[in-house]
Image 1 (cartoon, rainbow, N blue to C red):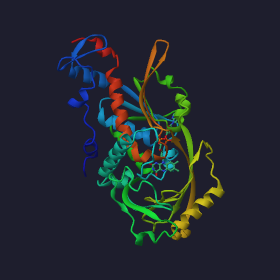
Image 2 (image 1 turned 135 degrees about the horizontal axis):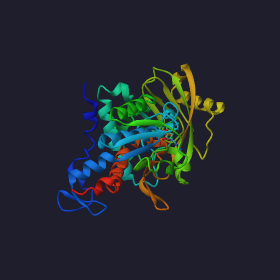
Image 3 (image 1 turned 180 degrees about the vertical axis):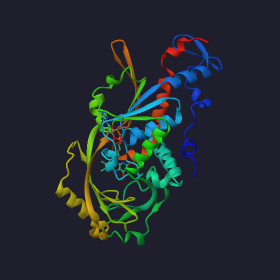
Length: 390
Ligand SMILES: Cc1cc2nc3c(=O)[nH]c(=O)nc-3n(C[C@H](O)[C@H](O)[C@H](O)COP(=O)(O)OP(=O)(O)OC[C@H]3O[C@@H](n4cnc5c(N)ncnc54)[C@H](O)[C@@H]3O)c2cc1C
């Protein structure tokens, strides 16, 4: 079997590569200046600061686990702990359909969104084409995105990232008599809980830890950890006081219909059908500022009706289960460093939250960016080891 750890490290430059060392303060070649003024050689700096750093990642959904895995892959000597009050199968990530089709963040520059999507797609392609695919719950999925009215933009920004993107033929469109235009392509899908369980296993193999705990205030962790990485999804509203993040409620059905093998998604309507490993996800609602976690039977009936109109064979679906999740929506995903102050105390935080309806599509790209920011925070730490001058 392919050694997963070596495969997974391919997209991530190792911390000890010259490109990473550029992050550290510039001094003469091979020597660096500590915050206390001491000059040490690069190896001393790298090994001591990076070895000693204790990192807490808050959140065990898709974003928290992928960020923790990225950190532990990239900084193998750091200690990484994931802390969360909910784990699979009880996170928003477990409710999602998990397909890689980007959601548009109006205040994140499109080139940035495309880069995150490409990095995620390439990374999951590696997994999807490896013997790990089944355990990780990653699979290829082909299908159609259909429109009742012809969209202004017939070729979205992500068209050259997915495979085989093209306009649907007239013959294909005959399956959808209410729709005038469509796009056919092949993308990837993450099946949860498998993907979350697999990431947690990888984190533990890398030496990471997992703790069940609700955090009321980020300062609770001050002193126990050097840097916090906040991946708390919609929980960030309370935890950081960020009022830009709001819930977009999604109600979906998970049904047994193993004969459905292609996805069907209305590009300008609410209905979607995404086949997974064990169930088919039928959606769905997008209810802004709605915090209601209980399901609504009338909504379930509508969703089922809409999806049967697109794929009539679904009338024979069995074992229908209803799930509700709150998308952590924000005009822009927040991947950012912040230093908090309380009196003379400082708390370094890297934020990675606000992925809204597109977390699966960009999570590895944002995890890599958060890891890069974390390296910058660690490089700036004033650790006791710096005081021991060579
Ligand atoms: C119905 C639906 C369908 C979707 N379909 C897709 C799709 O097909 N493709 C796609 O790309 N995206 C999809 N999404 C969006 C995707 O699910 C989200 O973007 C993603 O799950 C967000 O992940 P997260 O890790 O940020 O949040 P979550 O999964 O909610 O995880 C947050 C974590 O933080 C923890 N936490 C929060 N506050 C605290 C606290 N105070 N103390 C301790 N822990 C805390 C929680 O316990 C949890 O572990 C869908 C979403 C929904 C609801």
